[in-house]
Image (cartoon, rainbow, N blue to C red):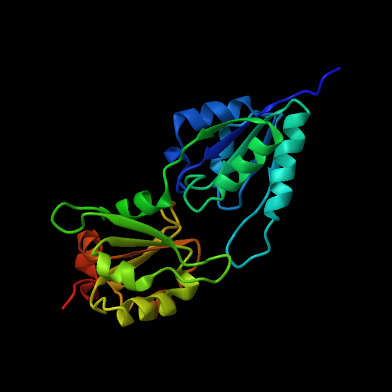
Length: 252
């Protein structure tokens, strides 16, 4: 008897709010025998899973103990080889700082059938909750997504980013906010550049601070914001709906 082969859906659950998960993602979840779900995925998304589906928590949250990536990939291959349909449910979009590329490589190497279902990434959706467009024809002609936390500790080219004139959206950057701001200012970006930090974006527990690059760290600490959070740096932050209530949001 030949080896049974299932299928893996690599699914982006969106930025947080379960209603921002796509229809295609919901349909795929209903097909799954096994669901491997990340810690940052709102559990409301699992309402679309079958009642008899096996739900496996494979938590990954910055600064906390995480399930090893290699173990997750082994589980995906194992259950697929048992002939099961597997849903790998990841926060945001699997291919934007979600390590979806690594899981895709593992599935290809094992000869497992897979389908990628993109999700709405926090980098665009979370700023939008405050009315911040990450691009604007008259303000920012582009946007750069960058991680504040790298595996090998190598820094992004902050000097090039400071010169680019583009909006900077920093994922996983809250704990290194002071270092990031200092590097950008040292590279020539004004400390008066509008900037904001948004915690638990798109959820009912969302909180934010709208400030300047130079003042953001101080206000984040005063409000005790914590991860998960998105940091947005650039003139587009002037569009923030809360800016009028927070005078420091305006550059001098």
